[in-house]
Length: 252
Image 1 (cartoon, rainbow, N blue to C red):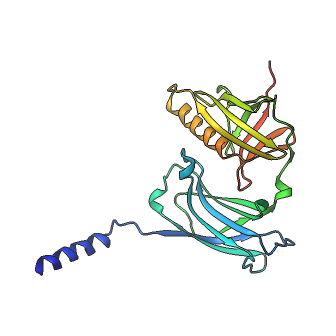
Image 2 (tube, rainbow, N blue to C red; image 1 turned 60 degrees about the vertical axis):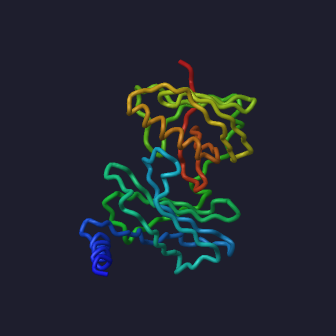
Image 3 (cartoon, helix red, strand yellow; image 1 turned 60 degrees about the horizontal axis):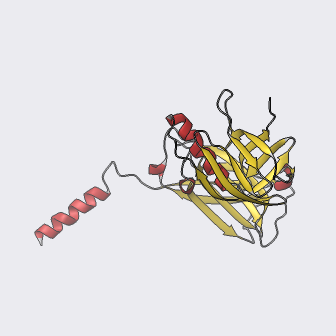
């Protein structure tokens, strides 16, 4: 009996040890435009994402989904997202992304930067109407050649070998990913884009090049729509966030 009591006390001491990490939460609100109205069947999704995660599955650190009718207070909607702070890396960039959809169509979306140090309370994400941020319908991509200028909002620095996408008329996609060449298949229907069967060669490069490649391929794999914004082609994910921005390749 005494041994069992000692063992139980040891377990309790471990659980409440000063170094134990407690769960945290990101709390705040999203703000809709002043005159925005939402359909009763709209859906709200908000997530904490790691913008520098190399694995697409590791990007989402916590999320919340609310089905309509949404519990608005005025033009705001409050949220609480549980967060394991042990997954935060000091050098990574984070964001709170929010989107309101209806039948898989993005109505409003927005993003607020977040750091590993917080603050995690009182975060406000301003939403904009989808038509205010989306460009026009992309032209047929088959037979076009593009160079990447931004990956997840970061400029691709001049002097680096350009990341590229070449679309063929028979539904093939290929290009340079930062270290390796890649091949894939694509399907396009107006703004909808589906990329499948992504495969790369197996060369090893400097760590910086491998990091660029991992971020590029993760963003390319997450793209589900293609739109023009001026002369730039934007590939967006399911939340309407621009993952890749490209310009037409112009041979010298």
